[in-house]
Image 1 (cartoon, rainbow, N blue to C red):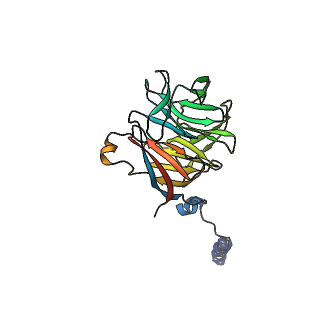
Image 2 (image 1 turned 135 degrees about the vertical axis):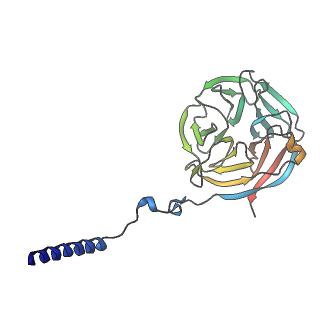
Image 3 (image 1 turned 180 degrees about the horizontal axis):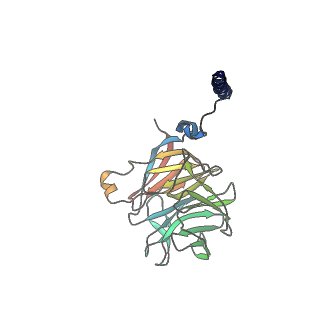
Amino acid sequence: MRWRWAVVFALTFAVVAVGLVVLAQPWAPDPASRSASDSSDPAGVSDKLRIDVLARYRHDTGAFTQGLELHGTDLYEGTGQYGESELRVVDLDTGQVRQRVRLSDEVFGEGITIAGPRIWQLTWRAGVAYERDPDTLAEVRQVRYDGEGWGICHDAAAGRLVMSDGSDQLTFRDPQTFTATGSVAVTLDGEPLPRLNELECVGDEVWANVWQTDRIVRIDPASGRVVAEVDAAGLLTGDERAGADVLNGIAAVPGTDEFLITGKYWPALFRVRFVPAV
């Protein structure tokens, strides 16, 4: 029977030895078991801003606002809807249209921007961008692009256009040829942010309306990260809101930290600052 005790002793020793080897190994958690906090956005959350209203101006309630641009003392506005799309020059103080050009009934006008000696005006699903003369609004040429057109702005510092298409992507384009030169995906706290609409380039950042919300976001186009969110709710009264559509339209006031903002079919346009929320 001695041989049996020898076998038992050998097996016991082997089990103990394996256990000691396992205990000696450095412990590392299963990557799948890490908590959600371990994968948080290392850049941190965005700043929260609110609206400080400085002035209120009249706005045409028949304007389905798609793009807004202040150039000198001239306010340019692009409007949408089939059969109603226009590019206008508007008197800021009175809200009266001083100059206008109508788009074909078959296209739906979208965002606008001024880049040097030209205005670019997008269309929604026609895949056409119009280059126009800023003095006469006359069409100079048409340029084709793929996908939908929503918002556009001129990033003068980087020498490019920035364009949105309703997704979380911003596309960079040559301001003369309209050729795509790159893109970036926009994220908010590490998650994709879709429905980016009307754009405004200021310095090295991009401001964007988020369609069907009362939010405006400030984007770092180098990383695509949203660095600030503006709560623009409450600008209209209850009665005004009943006859209006969504917030859309943002134009920087050159030489200041102020903006002009409005919406589709809104009765008013507001001169504002974006200040820290309290």
